[in-house]
Length: 229
Length: 255
Image (tube, rainbow over all chains, first blue to last red):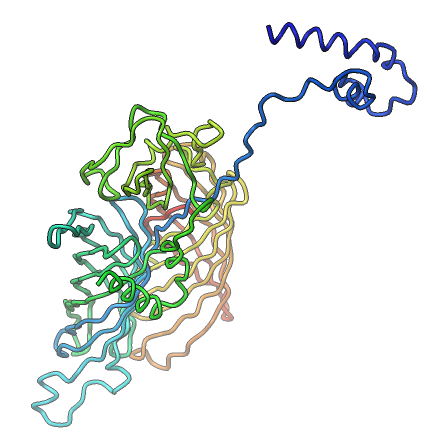
């Protein structure tokens, strides 16, 4: 019914325009070819052909993505032969998928004196600046056991136990040393963006301080906070 | 008592100043702030967390609307009309409709779309002329085949350490293959720091040039395993140039 009416109206509207195609000053062809608009402008026919449905123009906001985590950590670093000392570090993590993530770490600690140095009384192996240990590390992680923890009846927090493996460099005792790390950690999401971490990492590097090369294991334990963004 | 978590939030926000947008999430008025979609499937499953193992605690029936609050990896946090919040997978979200009746377009097809995610960043490790090398790099796709890359490497050798910085171009022959081979060409500088035990060590900075080849293996849409071979020429100030071979492997992602 409606389409028949429309056809009739179109015919009615196009009648006064039938000569217009030959109009020498027509200008824009597109305009002239639109009988409805031309008609209503001239007012010779009722402007009944209005678009029945207005297309909803929706402005879709961007969905906020938060795959990155950044934050500091503090803990203890056990430098083999050089005692256990506080460590301060920072991490940047990118979550590639629900299973995998990549992280970059930087950290700094001070090594204390070896028992040899203490017992010999004065024969220091390292200067003070050589005793500062700094490292960087690029690691990949796998969320081995994602899960939830429940606190009381009403609260549940998402969590994950993860393992990491990475490579990097450790500056210690006057040299940069190629370092391989393996680690495990626990992530507790306090809300959508605030995360608490507990990490244990083994930094493995070779050191030739006493003449021969020696592979050392340096264990780090750290508590950290990160913010998702 | 109810104010305590908010106070805690404010405190932490004050500490981590700069994460202002995080506070925005708690803003009451969010009209027009979120993408609103309606469920076109028989139902939309809401999980308690952003992972396949988290249990489904609620289903939103067909026709109802949900606000899309945020995205983490392939999971979307949504809120239904009654204020329940849960996580839905990308696959399910692709079958929801926007207010104009069109499907939600997340713009990330199964294959990498270089125009949407032109950046590539990665880390590699391997062998450089007998020493260990660690590399971090960032690339930018100029088109489907060609990208420009900047890299920083640290070489840890027995006799000397070195830092390398390079800029170069990479041409990927078949970006549509799962294993995509590429060749590269570039230049840069190297700073060589001989170890103190060598007689009369002098640090030196030299210009370098390289040619390279390698392959990327697509583990997922945004994640690749990448292996590189590069042959470097170090343009020394001495009589002859030095040549070094480098092999390295690592991972990279697109963003």
